[in-house]
Amino acid sequence: MNGFGDIAFTLTLAAVIFGALVAGYGAWDAAAPLRSRFSALVARRVGAAPPAGSPRARQRRAPQYGASLLKTLVEKLKLTRGADADKATNLLIQAGYRNREALVLYVGIRLLLPCTLTSLVLIFSTPFNMTATHVALLGAIVAVGSTYTPPLVLRNMIKKRHQRFHSALPDALDLLMICAESGLGLDGALVRVAREFRRFMPEMTDELQLTALELGFLPNRRDALTNLVKRVNIPAMRSLVNTLVQTERYGTPLVQALRVLAAELREERMLKAEEKAAKLPAIMTIPMIVFILPSMFIVLIGPALIQVFKAF
Image 1: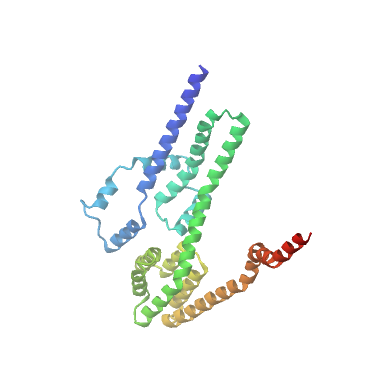
Image 2: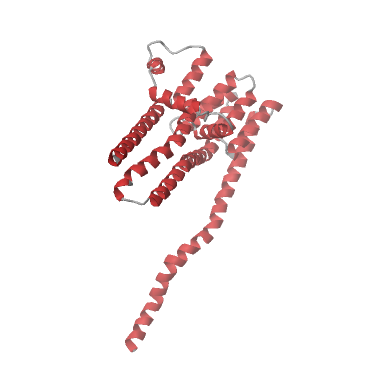
C-alpha cells in the first residue's frame, strides 16, 4: 500500500510539472515581440485596422490556451495588482517588455518555478535514499534560489540594455544634432535617427520610434519625453530628455541645446576613460604580485640557489 501511495504521489507531481511547463511555454509563445506593439501604435495613429485575412489578424484570433490558463491563475491570485506588480512592470519596461503578457509571464515564472524545481528535487532525490532532513534542506535551497533567480536575471538584462544605450547614445545625439541643423523638427529628427540605427541597434530604433509616435498623438509632448526616461533610465538619457523638455517649454534653439549636451557627454566620456586609466596601476598590482614577481625571483635567484646547493 505504501508503494502504491509513492507511485501515485510521483505521478501527481509529474502531472503538475507537465501542466506548469505547458502553461509556461504557451505564455512564452504568445508573448508578442516589440514590433507588434509599434505596428499597433502605427495602425491606431493612422486609424486603420489589420486586414481580416492577414497573419496578424489570424494570430489574434488563434486560441491561446496556455497563456489564458496562466493569466487566469495569476489573476485569481491577484498577483498583477499592488506595489510589487507595479515595480515588476517598471522593471519589465526598462528591460524592453511593455505588453501585459510580459507581466503575466514574469509573475507566472516566479510562481511556478520554485514549485516545479522543488518538486523535481523531491522526485529525483528518492532513488538516492537521502534522509528527510537532507531532502528538506535541499528543497529549501532550491526553492529560495529559484525564487530570487528571475529578479536577478531581469536586473541583469536591464543592466546590459542600459550599457548598450549608454554606448550608443553619443552617436545618436550627434545624428540628432545633424538632423536638427538640417532643418528637421524633433519628431522628424527622431524618426531619421531611428532609421539610421535600425541595423546597428534595433533597441534604440524601437525607443526612438515609439517616442516619435507618442509625440504625435499624446496631448502633452512632455509626457512622451518622460516616458522615454521611464523606459531607458540612465543619466545620459535623463540629461537629453531634460534638455528637450526645456527646449519645448522655453523655446530654446534645439541645435544649440543639443550641441551643448553633446559637448558635455563627450567630456563625461573622456573623464570616465581617464578615471579607468588612473585605476589601472592599482588594478595591475595584484596580477604583478601573483604572476610576475615570482617568475622574476625564480629567474634572478634560481642560478644562485643552484650554485649554493652544489657547494653543499
